[in-house]
Amino acid sequence: MDQQRERGGNNGENSTPKVEGEVLMPRPFMGVKDRRFASFRMVVKGDYLDVESNSLLSDILSKRGDQKLLFADRITKLSGSGNIKQRAMMITDRAIYLADMDSYALRRRIPLASVDRICLSKLKDNFFALIIPTEYDCLMASTRKTEIVSILVEATKIKPAYEISVVFSNRFEYRSAADATKVVLFEEIEGTNHLLIQPSTVDFISHN
Image 1 (tube, helix red, strand yellow):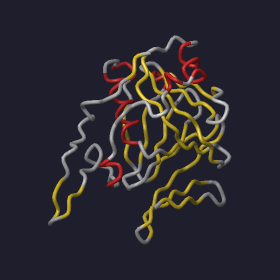
Image 2 (spheres, one colour):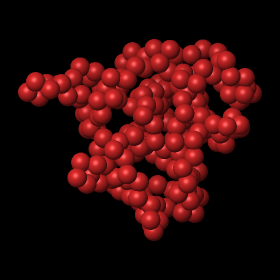
Image 3 (cartoon, helix red, strand yellow):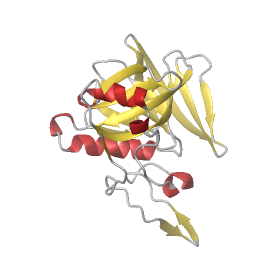
Image 4 (cartoon, one colour):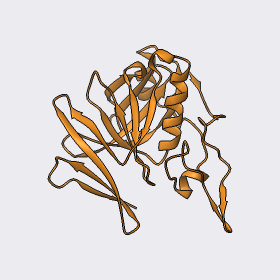
């Protein structure tokens, strides 16, 4: 299985920090989204789950004819009911796979061609949403969000028929289920970023 161990270009994100006074400040992701220092200093590796050595995960890909692994890591998924679930995310040049972290059972396969766009806030947080018009959307969080978004954009650039776009907004809608749409709001309150999901009654997640 081919694996992308190191990545070069970063989709227009300049890795050189800008200087404000005597403090080094990481440049905004894609010129828009504020970044954490941890994100700026993070080493890009690609496969953080060692998929090649995990027969259950590698079988998920091989059974579906996927040979080129671009990324693999543990992510947090917010379900339509508001539950937080840990998932193993694998990205190939053809699809996104989400598997259970305990059993490694496949929970969802999302063809890259079905992803219309990725929504992110303009604040320093780890959340991102995959907008999939033909299915329900996917709201997730990862400390490697910048790497995930960059990989997805680069993977579809060579296929303009379904190139994934990136939208930055502190308010966007996503379909938590086939028949349910929710509004996601990001707010900064006293230096802390918060995610508010409506119309859930109490769906308020603090994210320092």
